[in-house]
Image 1 (cartoon, rainbow, N blue to C red):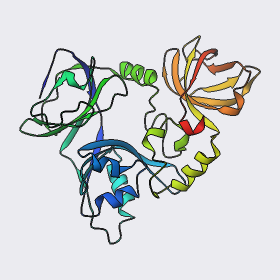
Image 2 (image 1 turned 90 degrees about the horizontal axis):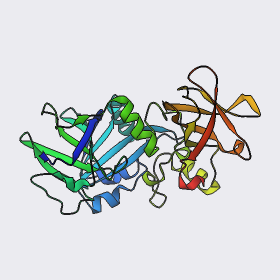
Image 3 (image 1 turned 60 degrees about the vertical axis):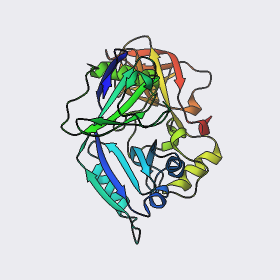
Image 4 (image 1 turned 180 degrees about the horizontal axis):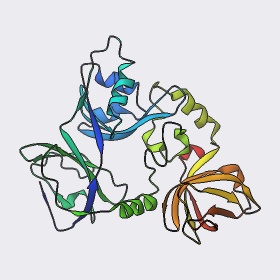
Length: 308
């Protein structure tokens, strides 16, 4: 795999990989994850972001799922969550022809190109559609290039053989990665949301199928969907002063009762959650990095469509 000069930057995406194989793999996973994996199987190889939920609708883990065919899936969970995901799936295996194996043969990288996936020149290239998966040969083994387009039109995730030399790029430091996430309004697992979060309070509607059959946690998702409103939503904040990470948000007329919380901060910009019922006809304040209060000059609600 080679990269053109239009390729600009990247960083390592820390993931655990679970291989799911068997005659019943598609049927089993379809009943576990929030996205519609049958659609992915119809377009295989194809990828989808998805969430494994508990019975109360709270996430066990997010994942990026690669469907190679109806009997062969690769599930990429956040680093440290691979065994938890495998164990959570294994609890629902009864007589299914499905095997679950944590694989340690992959590394994952987020890559950013100037314009589109086509600026990544990959050989051999299987797909002829830049919106689909690319299969590449890297260090003599298979590799996968998954289009994401979250941070930029040319945002992809590369799954490469473990131990192979990393692709050449300008490494993005943590501040630059945070700036990308804030601009994109992209929540980070373990920082902006976790196992105690409600999935509908975050902008994940594209990763949730509202048309397929039952999956774990669907009843809670359905109730929130039909109600059409959630108590809190994910939001992007801009303030007059640098904000405090983990700080609270208040109505200006009552700076003692929190109505929101900041979870990711870079200077005067931040991501966090805020309670919807407290937003009407009010100015907002948030705890500042210097110990005082900062006025919120801009608020962008990044809620799921079902919460609008």
